[in-house]
Amino acid sequence: MQIERAGALVTGGASGLGLATARRLAADGALVTILDLPTSRGAEVAAELGGVFAAADVTSVSDVRAAVAEASALAPLRVVVACAGIATAAKLLDRDGNPTPLEDFERTVRVNLVGTYNVIAQSAAAMIATEPNASGGRGVIVTTASVAAFDGQIGQPAYSASKGGVHAMTLPIARELARHGIRICTIAPGIMETPMLHGLPQAAQDSLGAQVPFPPRLGRPDEFAALVAHIVDNRYLNGETIRLDGAIRMAPK
Image (cartoon, rainbow, N blue to C red; front, side, top):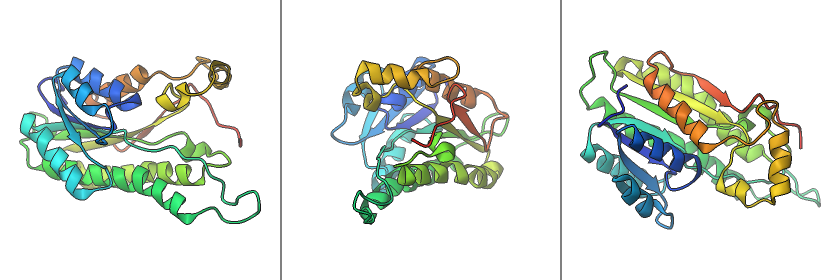
């Protein structure tokens, strides 16, 4: 799929993996729309990239539909990258042996899984209405899971379930959208340099990086963005979840 002059939508594009991806797509010539919360730096990032900011909540059908329409107004929507999500930690039971609030579990699943599904659905509907390219392709969707989908640690039942769901729905959606010339892949990052990790002491960051077999460091957002660009470019990648983790396998805790 040709990125240059294509319309691209990046959710969670104001920071972290989404920001790196938005910058990479813009550098490759895409017309980028940043979808992020109204309180984010989305407007600033969009101005930097010569794109558009769509203030939206990924769990809102009307918000995402409007953002997709804004992205499509710039150019036919060809690339969608879903990076918006939350990372929460809560055990099944609290220290007294009582169940933790169900609402916390539901919120994580709603943002990470339901929100991703919402973005895929609204984006695919817009892509179907576009003209295919010479090879019959209409667009590429890339979603974000996590190694926690496979190696969930203690305290991650909600996060692991939400990211496991993103992985699990990739293949059936790829099969459904194949007849429309739309591909979808998922990236499952390991321990990445994100704003959340930057809040940890340097010693803690170094310790986490040292757990990675090779290279023994945290993953960089630009490496995530590079993989997105490759997925978009490689027409034979479809229906797959790719681990981007330096071969780490997370311990129980």
